[in-house]
Structures are given as structure tokens and as C-alpha cells.
Amino acid sequence: MADKMAELGEQVTQALKDSEQFQALQSAFNEMKADTDTYKLFKDFQKIQLDLQQKQMSGQQLTDDEMKHAREVADQVGKIDSIKNLMEAERGVNSMLNQLNKTITQPIQDIYAG
Image 1 (cartoon, rainbow, N blue to C red):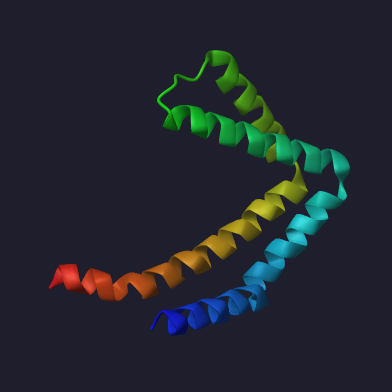
Image 2 (image 1 turned 30 degrees about the vertical axis):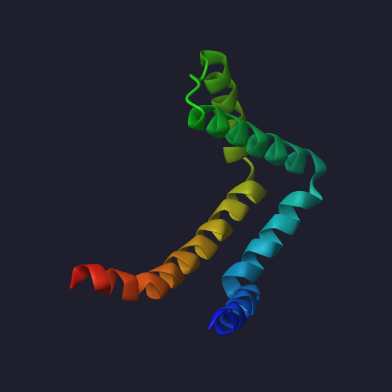
């Protein structure tokens, strides 16, 4: 049974890669990455988000300076069309994955509902 699940997982992976949503995400990422300054800002923003998230998860308090810096970088990121396009494409992939997850987990929900 585990082999069948692994095989199905590989099929889903390929279907994801073949989907319009994934292709749009890949294209948007490549477009954003082509601009060195934009890509650097994007990577900085990701690092800031990860650092703040890890700090919060460990129970540490975020400083005002950290929050201010995060907001400033987020404001910069939000003004760049290629990053906005990337985020929109990401929402499309996430929507598809959420629907897939809902479909896969429906039998488990049915157990608890009945």
C-alpha cells in the first residue's frame, strides 16, 4: 500500500508541474529573479519573515525596530510589479493545493463527522 501511495504522490507531483498554475508561478519567479535588485530584495524579505517567525515561535518578543524594518521592506516589496505577479501566481498554486488537500482528507473528515 505504501508503494501505491508513493506512486500516486509522484503522479500528483507531475500533475502539479504540468498545471497552468505551476507554470505561471515558475514564469513569474523567473521574471522576478531576472532583475538582480528585485531578487535581492525578495530574498531579504524572505529572510526577515523567517527570522521573525522563528523568534515568535520560540516565544521571543519582537522589537519595535524589527517590526518597523519588516514593514518597510514589505512596503518596498509590495510596490514591485514582478513580485506582485509572483504573489498572485503563488495564490493560484495554493488554491489548487488547498482543494487537493480537501479532497484527500475528506475520508478522514467523514470518519469524524459520522
